[in-house]
Image 1: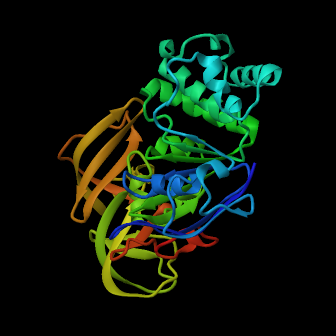
Image 2: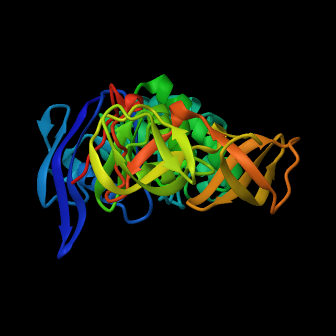
Length: 368
């Protein structure tokens, strides 16, 4: 397998810039996920790495070789599309073995490698079945097998589970990660689904409007979002935001929100008075009748053992994840305490997380 290096990659379609000067490295054997909403540039980036799109500028290195302007066929990669793209007139065996047949591999070696691949994917009992009769999950395994059998340097996957229903998606998410762990393959995976990304990735690159917002491990991205966009995009429910205005002094450990002094990780920046945003995850909010931060309950979503309660304040809504046994009523006024060591303060202008103790030793973020 191989390391993939991307340097200052840019793609323009006329006056529209789809990808802006992106630089990142995918380590050998890493499961790397590009995550973001539709139109953020993730698929365009993937297609440039695959050789299906030529960049406007920048470099792409595969295993140390500059492949920036090489044809797709000249890059030792396997590409999986969202749609299965199987040959309907062939059975499972012929579909999996087709790439090797195109390379002139035949006979005993072809048969052996097809059977090894099918066994790895647990579809060896389906080898003689026509693909038209297979369920969606099995078709996806056949498509995976056709990619795996070539033993390429890297696997590139463009939302390969998007066409599956929820049950099959959950199953295939687990299967893909298990398969990756067995093969130790360098894998670049594109999705807009944060649950897929968080459950499979070694590292996640979050993109928005062609820009890399953050590149870090799933835990780092959840705990220490580099921008308000990342904080809002990751998490279910997403982080809550309270808008306020304040100056920031180095070493400051509290901010005034809704008439209450809220403790935050020590900030290390100097900012003139201006708009700021306080971010808090639902699980870091607790109800406390004696708290000075107060609001009125708007509604409740029951989730079995827990409930997510939405509270209106003068500075925005706060969602709290609390026990389902805790009685609450719409319209009720409640006090809230926020877990101070997990709060994030964002700049009001560009949405950047302001430097604090929480971010010392930091997390990858890029703007371009």
